[in-house]
Amino acid sequence: MPLFDLQGPERNRPAAAVPPTGSAAARKHGIKPMPALAWNARVAAETAHLYERIKTVVPAVEWPVFAPYVKAINALKRERNAVILAHNYQTPEIYNCVADFVGDSLQLAREATKVKADVIVQCGVHFMAETSKILNPDKTVLIPDSRAGCSLAQAITGADVRLLRQRFPGVPVVTYVNTSADVKAESDICCTSSNAVQVVESLGADKVIFIPDEYLARYVAAQTKVRIIAWKGRCEVHERFTADELRMYREGDPGLQIIAHPECPPDVLAEADFTGSTAHMIDWVRNKRPRRVVMVTECSMADNVQAELPEVEFVRPCNLCPHMKRITLPKILDSLVYMKEEVVIDAGVAGKARRAVERMVNLKN
Ligand code: SF4
Image (cartoon, rainbow, N blue to C red; front, side):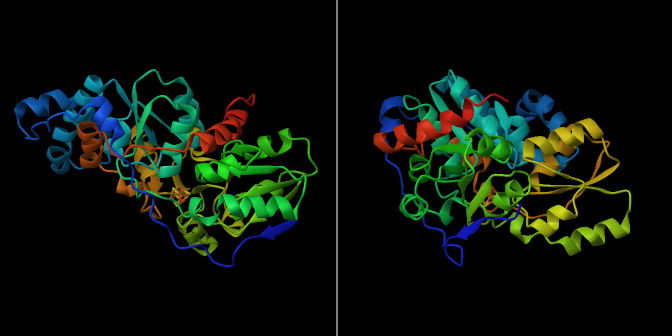
């Protein structure tokens, strides 16, 4: 079914800086000395098993730069009773060598509900760290760079949602997790790209407001009889892919498999052999083991799957997410040494947002 309506500004809003956070975490947990970061035979021996995991995607010449940070971060995690949650778009040395849990937004949100540690370091973007804090109000949640934003999260505010509710009274609001805590707090339920159709249909409504990703909304609308009122938000990474470039890849190799994320434009999805969330895309490659595949999504994910499945050849139309790439090993180490940047959310907003996130997390698969 085509969209019922499309709301929102004509252009994406410019990215606003995420507000700086305080140092309450440093006062609570204390500051540690910065570890030595030398590359030597001992560091090489202690980290050799970790390099094994990424040797197909990280050249040996780069490992002496990464290894001292990897060793120091893993030691500090134990001292701090901390865990690292890393999104599928993180670089291979983070995803494979320091993360305790990896996954898409839904998997990370589910992991966040089970975390036993005192401290969570979120290697992803700010809305993901907010989701972890919403689900763990008593834990310290850190993000190594609080400027790691998201064009979708910037596309809509809590005030916009209140206006939409006035314009469409009684219509429930389904909110993609790629939004601020403020927006989640105004929503009935959250969703991710893994479960968006299931969430929309779970409400039993004939019409829903689905925010903020227009392309994900179009993808959902095509698969359900529920009428979808969408918002003009876009992912700045996925909207850059074009159907022409995918046709060009296919002409060069007709046996090539193309799998795409639903944040891509509809004509791009029309060229794909499979469409799914990052977790579903990874599962698809694990199960099908294609000879050659294009993953139409942020390009670090292909590196991470390549490290696991070296026999699959990945064609990489490399669109990097500049926000995800703000997270680096030196910044993760700084987080654990200085307990920064702490994610702080107003308790009233967090409580309302928690209802919307938990309603999604508690949906049966
Ligand atoms: S890839 Fe797109 S949706 Fe994901 S964090 Fe980056 S800008 Fe946001």
